Image (cartoon, rainbow, N blue to C red; front, side):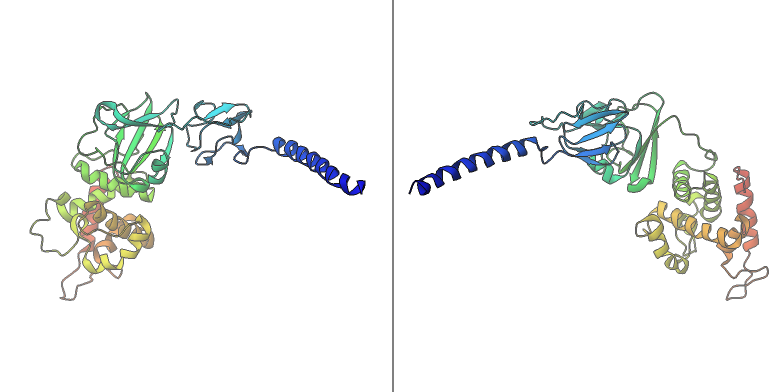
Length: 342
């Protein structure tokens, strides 16, 4: 009978030993939300108590965030603590995790309202959102000496571009709350070409945006400007024009419709018939294809105007000569006069 009485006592003792073992075992385990993440990297989500290595040191995350260039652990003590000690009760994350060196963008004029600091890098709309910047935002900015900021009206560095190399307490009506992507880098821009004096600034902006999309280094912008001059006198010749062509570059309806899917694939948006930027972009898409297909700029101009099957002496359906050679001569001369290199 004593054996029966001692069995529960032995069971209790065994349970105590097991409980003590499990307590010690789980106490030794790292916290569930902590992880060794290896080398620090930008555009990466980090949780509180994650550890990373950077420049030979180890750092522990103090506040959950998505990293950006300029927020390296050594630069942002508000986000990272040197060493691997965990922090069981992290302080709340600030609205704007600061970078110690960068461009400061403000919601209001005169450097007022919510402010976000960004380091060197290219920020599409999703990256801006991750940094706490909504679409169509920014009324003033502070730019460190020697830095350059390129503000774009559209996501993925499209649309109108405005460049800043100094601070501005008011960006003006044309830029205010228009930012959808931004590039930030050190040094000043060194364009390979400059705007020809007769080309209106907005036309040059459209042409340069298309040039940047094709990676032409500015020379394509000179060619597009020469085409726009010939086709529409930079837009001044559009009122009363008998042509059914589209705007600045006078792309005819049938041609335009044939290229709509290519336009969407290249520029990531549906073609807008009323947008001057899209008119130049579509014309640039077609012209670039002709240049590639027919071997050089001059031949590309011949077939941009005369069609793929043009030949000297070709006529239209009414028997009228198609003077694509005269067109190409005029545009090419203007392009070379602008400083074109090809």
